[in-house]
Image 1: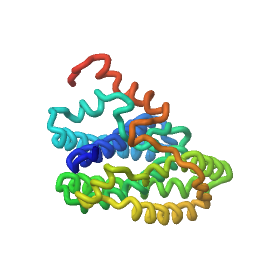
Image 2 (image 1 turned 180 degrees about the vertical axis):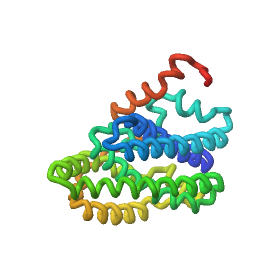
Image 3 (image 1 turned 60 degrees about the vertical axis):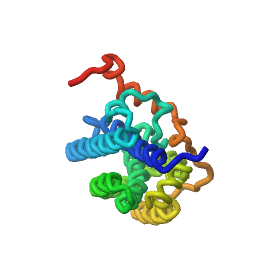
Image 4 (image 1 turned 135 degrees about the vertical axis):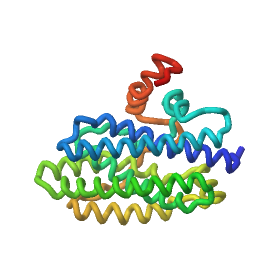
Length: 254
């Protein structure tokens, strides 16, 4: 049975929240691990931006659902298969090049997605997107600078950045693999058009890779399933750490 537009909007908002929460958690893991003090402060702020966005999405999801669930319920009281984030954001931080490539590939997409959502016909989602896109555009400038610095740096930094790009590229196809939820949000709420986003994403990625002297990998096979609740083994460990306090002390409050 086809879902109605309200259910599609709820699922779409939860996907946005899950992407933001999981990536925010990944970035918090890097606190005290940055290569220089300035980057340490920047990374902490990037993480806070994502956590703040997740709170906005989850709060709105609770309103749309109408069952009394709060942002804490969505973040801390769901199991791995209930999360609908794309696989790219749950990939481990690895070395610094891995982190930068992951952020660059996702945030190039996310900025375009938010630009589209800022023009959608749902007032609350458009409001959240208009706020979030300002933050993500800053993120994207930051990580793009680092990718060029690594790719066009010395022999070792170039080789590591190229390896990171080759290993993470297989997760980019899922960003544009729309399903019924995307179709309904596009049709009923004037949501982002993934086909158009993919073309723009491709051009923007190619431009930065050229500056970084990095080679775009061949798109032979793409991984996916995150939006359907099928995740890599990495998400389970991330959720276990993130939810430890709430699971150990149910109902705990600060």
